[in-house]
Image 1 (cartoon, helix red, strand yellow):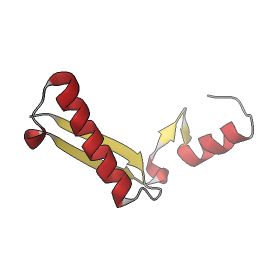
Image 2 (tube, one colour):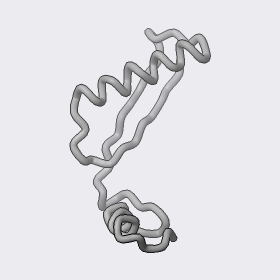
Image 3 (cartoon, helix red, strand yellow):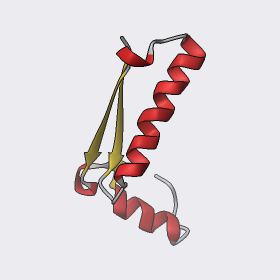
Image 4 (cartoon, helix red, strand yellow):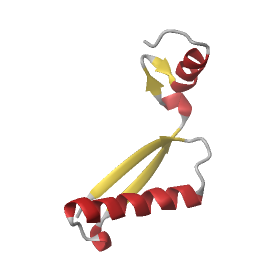
Length: 73
């Protein structure tokens, strides 16, 4: 029974987008590994941007730095 955990920042992913992720991951596991969709579990966790960091920075600060052409850390 495959278990897939997708973590995304909480920035307004719609129910339809989440459903597409769940269906797509399930179909991929069936196609590539022959897994049974009926026993495939997909969980989507939405993480507040305050709790998500990249390169030693909170994600919003990292994005701002990237947008301004600043150095990647």
